[in-house]
Image (cartoon, rainbow, N blue to C red; front, side):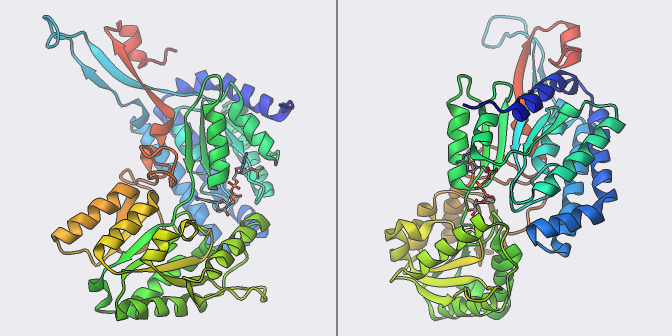
Length: 471
Ligand code: NAP
């Protein structure tokens, strides 16, 4: 592998900063996270304008995303100040022979060390330099080395410069948040392979996640790879949900399908219904609403090409009836809606691929058994939404069981886009939604990814007091 001086320097600086940061207390971590939020807000106008030039996501969305990023930083500051990363469980010693008799054991968690973080194209603030991965890693006591995303390199650099100023103002080492500008797959591979890196956080494509995850696993000392990859986010619309306000519900769902030109990991790509006249009417209403929304340009040529190829592949299927199609000849296009049968969906693997962008396939099933079969074939998704399952019944219990077996989050109202940052949140799910279904990348539990449990047995006072991270 060719040498990567920038990576070596950033990882060395992170390694040097790691022991100091691992033993920092909650208030110190909170001070940094709060100061980073304040810094972002202070430079809001310039940063949002720069982000808009690079991503074309629009000022309202980008201002909202900056708010969310500051909110995340402050929630992780509270989490650190309140002792979240330092929570431990102590079992007192019990005299006598085992199994009742036992030594004194305290279970603590220790920071893993430098985390490589891959910025996401679709969240230039919230999943980039100072996004949720960085906030949760810093709260957990780990330095971060950020791999900038080529879709917003100038913003990435500007946010990193701001970060360096905040670190200096708090007398903290610059190595706590490193930044890799190099735009190549090889650089990403080298970062993941670097012996100083102890974990990886990634949001992006299935192919990228698979390649980097393989790299993390094939190191002489493998490390955890927390990848958030593809998801088609089924919305199951049961007959009861179509008895009233059909047009209103179609508008709500279309808003979710077209939001951000569909460039959300939680964008609903599959609407699953029983084959009834009302379902056909709903699919047509959804198509009308989606066609009425003019989408803004996509984030990068790579993403736009992927979207076009995905939609063209769906539209070319004999079994798919196209209800709304992007007008490729216009600069401003709209989204895609198609309808197909559950049998075709189960038969053809390519109908099950995520099309990243504003694309939604309505799948009509002959029976509830086929609805279950479709969900099981999806296999892993960040979300499943169940509309019309308010009443408890044997059928709904069964549906919930299937939904929860494939999803990280099950919704009973609303739409899957929009992921609240709360202690209860889970943003993950079985493969291919994520590479580690036991962990979340959104919400306070995201810090668990970077804290390794450690049992201290019959530890002397000086060890117990340091919680396994000696000064
Ligand atoms: P991406 O292509 O996976 O790129 C993300 C990061 O991974 C980039 O830094 C990229 O490197 C790196 N990378 C990708 N493939 C790699 C490989 N084979 N080896 C080493 N590094 C690799 O994601 P993207 O650019 O954001 O968008 C492309 C597609 O990803 C979208 O069309 C969509 O399907 C999916 N996506 C999914 C989500 C989600 O939330 N699940 C979010 C965004 C995108 P470079 O910096 O060198 O390009």
